[in-house]
Image (cartoon, rainbow, N blue to C red; front, side):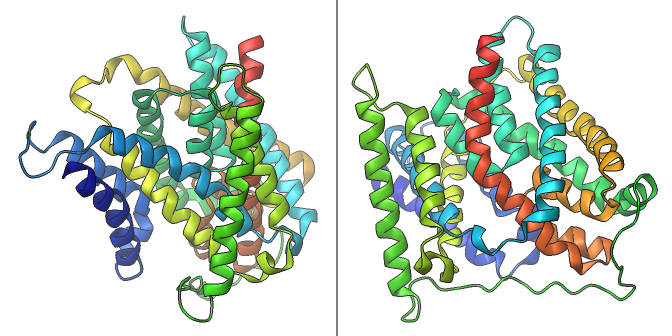
Amino acid sequence: MNTILTIFYLLGIPLLVKWLSARWKWIDKVSPMTVLYVIGLFFANLLPVGNPVFNIDAPTNTLISNLAVPIAIPLMLMGCNLAAWQTGKALKVFFSGLLAVMLCIVAGYFIFRGDSGAEFAKVSAVATGLYTGGIPNTGAIKQAVGVPEDMFLYITSYDIVVTGIYLIFIIFFGKRVFRFLLPSGGKRHNDEVKIEEPERVNAFDRQHIKTTMLALALTLGIAALSYGVALATSTDGSANMTVLILMLTTLAIGASFLPPMRKQKHSFDLGLYCVYVFSLAIASACNLREMDIAGSLQILYYLGFIILASLALQCLFARLLKIDGDSVMVCSVALINSPPFVPMAAAILKNRDVVVLGISVGLLGYMLGNYLGIGVYHLLLRL
């Protein structure tokens, strides 16, 4: 009975939160993933032990969390229309921000690793995915490098804290600070910026069912092929997770160039739903009663260092490259907080011209995040 209830819980609650986020704007503002983390932690920690009504079935929870990421990656990447991007300025801003983040991740590793170098390299790998891509990348990197459940929850929970503080800084001081430190660029609008809400598409209505089924079929094909290659390249009989994640990422990027995938608008949204399921499953597996909060504070300090130091470096690089303050701010928000926060940053700046730039930078980060996170992990193990 608990198995069936766990399936309904893991698949139904994210669907409910997603539905409510279209009606209650505060959910979008704090992020549906944050809401799902809170719900998961509630069920894992605040319900009485041995609750006779509902206990999360651990094997089912693990199985669904492990399946969610390989399905999410192709769906999300196929929803990124790379062929339509204006690459010039986006690449300039992205790579200056990327260089700043990568330098701080490596430097912070040597500052905060202590005596746990190999294990802390896993923290660096997940942090790379977080601050070059986003939560979808962290799930993939977690599986690829074998991050323990408790460590992963520390990282994602502390990330909510530090990125929340950073977002408060952006809301109240960001526009003045970035425009003071960096040259101005582009036209600014004194009127209130009204960013149109992204079109909410029902992927299973009559108009979209064909492309939805094609996207799902491609996803299953990519997942099956990637799993086959991961098994073939393994030496112990189990799938090589690094190969699996890199194959998923590469094949999905290639599929995004197919004409039917360029026209569809909803596979990214379907993939994001899978990430919501993964987020709920991870939080539901975490028993805070057994966690060593005091012993994990170096992760909090590490993430805070990455954000503060990379922001300073990014501003320095921007001055050298003569990149304007509005572009740097929206790029920083896209990398640190993820692309859904770009319209909010554009509204704060009253500059609608940076919306496409910010979203392009964020989506490029999604595409490269898996490669970078796994690459950083193996690099640090060898240093």
